[in-house]
Every structure is written in structure tokens, then in C-alpha cells.
Length: 435
Image (cartoon, rainbow, N blue to C red):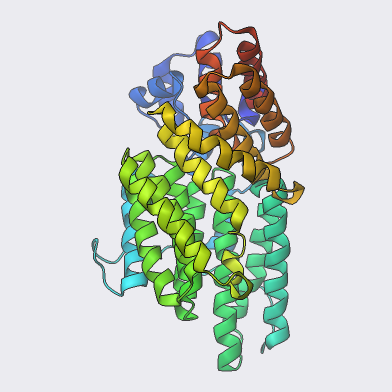
């Protein structure tokens, strides 16, 4: 049970309870879920939302720490304000729509998808702050954000999220300090970027509501700082959250809003990033033509971009990432049409060869996708070999997202369980998920 709780495998937790005589009705009553929800979880539906996980832990009398939920209510109130009780009960699709309305208001200046989305959080608890800040203070926030982002890339959001939140607690209250206008504007952008990183690390550890709140605040601050580049960045990242939740249509809308901000910023590289992710969304929606078209535009915009003068947030997107996104999009398309493996495999191979140890999470993503394509193509030996490398790479990363992105590999390995090597890979993946 402790292993299942640590892995947040709620299906396994419920199955163990059932095995020992606890009925579905009792589980539902304790956790505040409907019996149909409990039934779906028993059948394998994953639980990712932080508020649902905490409700399950509290309902079952399980210390939250057993499930790695150290970000408790006290910390949540101190850092991002008291939670909105209504929001916690909303359906995920409603939450997505509210964020989309907020994003549209920030980007377009009009509530094109509905009324005002509401207050995202109350003011954080205050700690002693400098009465007046200067450029040096802002540079310290920027330097801390760069260092923490590097840790996220290499080790995953679970490794550094608490540090990001702690730094944000300090940086946020600097907004009330006095400063010259240029310093204040730069501070808005710096804290927006830190909120964006807090959102990304929250997403990487499965705390979706927390991610949404941080990204919403990042949008507001980036807008106040007049930073179109950062607005595009935040919309891109929140779109990725929705892609991860299989909400491709909502993700596409955010990417399209981000495209507007990217074009206003005049950055070809930012436009390239948004085009690549729009291609991914279209691929998930089964629109092969639009996917391929947008990949082509991504490559064209990237070829025109001045990489030396690129904004800090978008510098990660280099030639390697163009190959990675190309391979990712064609992998999604290959799930329905295996012909796309001939495009996915070369692109993913180039990305895997280029990623260094400081990009371990991205490398794990690409190894998993590459292995999946080889299995789809029928090259089981090669697929198993690369799949094993993907597991070895992923084992060093604290990221719920890595495990989720490796699900297709597990599914393809299990489909070929008549092959002993594929069966061994599937077994290794089960051990990896249970760890």
C-alpha cells in the first residue's frame, strides 16, 4: 500500500482496499467521490489533480506525505493565497475554460470567451521586505530563476519546486516595495517569469490547479511589465498543460493566443515555438494536414530567427528542439498511421543524440517516443533496447510528467507480450511505475 501511495497509483490503492473487504460505496463515502468515479479509477483511470489527491488522502486517513503531497494547505495559503473552494469543486473542463477566458482578456483586452474569470488568489502572506529596491535586487530574482530552471530541466520539477515556491514567496512581496519605474517594470517581468517557472514545476509534479494559478498570475504580471515575449511564453506553457490532459482543442486556443503575443513581440523564434505546439495539438485532434503544414511553418520561422538576439525564455528552442517537436508530432500521427514512423524516427534520433545530461527530462521523452516508433514499425529488438535506455534516463528524474509520457511505450510493449523481449520491457515499466 505504501508503494502504491508513493507512486500516486490510486487505482492500486483502491484495489487493495477492495481486496481487504472495503466496498466501493465505503471508498466513495470516505473520499467524497461518486461510486461511478471510484469504479472508473478501479478500472485504471489516473488521478492527477492535487485537490482530488489530497481529498483522497485525508478521506482515507493517510498522511499526505505518504503520497508526496508536502505542499499542504498552510503552505498553499502562504504562497499563493487561500484556495477558492468553488474552483476546487469545478469540473476540469470548466477550469480550462475559465483560464482561457482570463488568457483572452490578458492577450486581447476583451473577455471573448465569457465574463471576468475571477480572482485567482488572495494576497500572499507578507514577510519583511526592502522598503526600496534597485536593479541589483531584480537581478538576484532573475539569477535565482535561471538557476532553478536549470535544475528543473536536469532533474525534474519534483526536485526544485519547493525552492521555486520559496523564492517566489520572497520575490512576490517585493512588488509592494518602492522603486524607479524602469526597475518596477523589470520586476514585474522577473516575478512573472518566476510564477511561470512555479507553474511549470507544479505541472511537472502533477499539481494542475496550482500550475493554473501560477500561470494566471504570470500572465497578469507579464502584461503589466509590457512583455509580449513572456505573455507568449506563459500561454505556450499552459497550452502544454492542456495537451498533457488530452484537451487538445483548449490547448490549441491558448497556442493561438500565444501566437498573437509572439507576433506582437516580433520574435520569429517565439512564433516557431507556437507553430510547433499548434502542430502537436492538431495531431492529437487527428488533423494530419494542418499538423504537417504548421511543422513546415515552424521550420521556416526558425530558419529566419536571429538566435543570438533571442529572448531568454525562448532560447531553449534550438535546432535540437525542432527535431524533437517534429518527432513528437509524427509520433502522435503514427499512432493512427504507422507510415509516420519514417518521419518520426530520424527526427527523434537526431534529438536524442544532441541532448546532453543537463536536458535529461527532454532526453527521456525522446527516448520513450523513439522506442515507441520502433515498436510500431515492428523492430522489437531495437525498440526494447531504446526503451530500456528511456527507463534508465527517467529513473533519475523527479517528474510525474515523464511517467505519463511513457504510457504509450508501455501500451505498445504490452501489445507485443508474445515476444519475450517486449514482455520483459513491459515488466520493467511496471516496476518503474511502482517505484
